[in-house]
Image 1 (cartoon, rainbow over the protein chains, first blue to last red):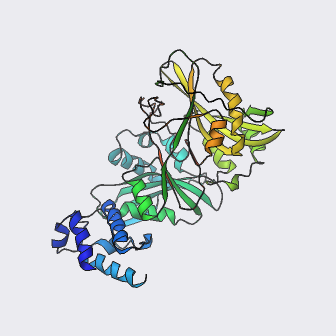
Image 2: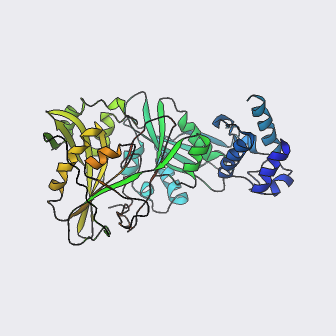
Image 3: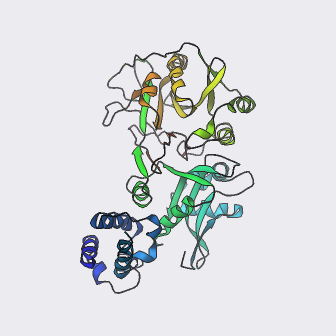
Length: 77
Length: 342
């Protein structure tokens, strides 16, 4: 799963994978519209729908948070 | 929101000057919503001075960093449908603030259906489709041209004929000369059946109390019973006029009565054409009303922008929650809004 997510993030910006800070938005590597695209990519990759209530800033601040979100969501689907 | 720096809340009445200043700084210098307080209040302020606008308030810098206006389709009721207007967040505020504003509007108590009109297809439309799984579409643009030798507003490269006839001959169309006449008549329409639900107070406010535009409100009657109302606005330009049909509420089949209305309209030889942007109406009813559909890539040009005038066909996008039979007209939300201070 992680590799699949990292591949999608790499397609947006390789820097996201190297980023060690705690806020991709503050670092200018993600913005809300990119996240909307990413959500669609994640839905396609994992063949699921991500409900709007999970599309929160805290779930996308770091690559690890994105992985954690997807692990949580795929566990329940 | 988890960050204490920002708060999303309704703006207070005394914050209107600060919002207008924010729009001027961050949206567009000299934007009519930044310069015309009367129009701002007409669009966003209830009778009890409640401001229908969420703001993203930055406590650290003590300033407004974003806004999202809400235009309700039913006034003075516990529930309503609504359209968004003026969604803006300062560029330097990185994060989810735009999404947070939209989510907050969606979840407002009483907000039955949140609809979008006039959104940017690359940003807001995408957001609504992907985040809220809303439907999205371009409005259809219908028109009816007067038979003139030349056209100064439209570009007419081909004249299509629509020879549809009205099925019934006994429709009567009446213009309501004042709001009292309108109020006493409109009760018979089952307005709650439509999405968005436009109540009488909304229609009255929208079309009889506009601070700049003058609208003409008509009723279509069959056997003395009101079937539908429609609203037009004359748009002058270059010594000619355009008739914009900006709203239609009621029995859709009665739209065929318009077929007889064109002759009346076009008696005024300065009228070049009538047009109607819509989504959700039956094509059959629109054709029976005598309209022609402006097609994708059409060589005819039926302009939409007049302040400043733009001689080109314009797409208007709409979004609405899945599974709803929502209808859209040109004057919904903030779409038929003047852009200049006259």
